[in-house]
Length: 96
Image (cartoon, rainbow, N blue to C red; front, side, top):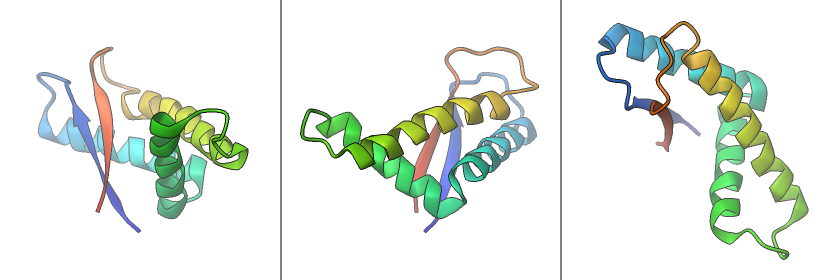
């Protein structure tokens, strides 16, 4: 299982700074979620929860999806840590 991370909507950022931010984001996610497999598991649960959430959504999957939300928020802060604030900047995860 693998994936790639892409930073969007950060104008004027050098290629090196973008790559470094993407790597920091990915490392923070993997640290929080237990490696690439854990990242993808949590991301998929979040995708499913976003589209199928309701009273019938399994509680165990909801907990996994919640881990994604918390980890992704912390990873965004790590990825953009030393850069100027850019509220529109967003990281995208793409499974390969």
